[in-house]
Image (cartoon, helix red, strand yellow):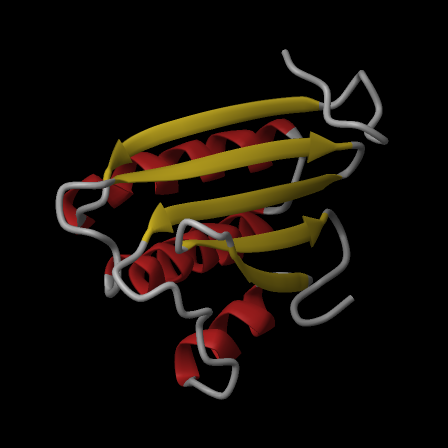
Length: 137
């Protein structure tokens, strides 16, 4: 396990890489549910996360480079789960924050952020704390 500067060495993470195509999203939904269950999230919290990850991927797939790889990193931090999905995109635009899709993400996850890397890879990070309830924490 590699350690990122400033992060605790005890942090667990799982990375899933798959073709940037909607047909593979069920794999990420299943991984999300399994990891959230490992952290003792409630069934409602697990379902919220599954939907949020699915929505984040749908946003990325709209602009993903054809034939590219979608990466999803799950970081388990105490009683929280951070999920970062990323894909190389054709235009390198961050998702619009005034769309219905972004509203859904914000309602389902405690915190949502989007970044664009120099190579036009777009990343969407969701951060959900167990017991925090829906919406911004």
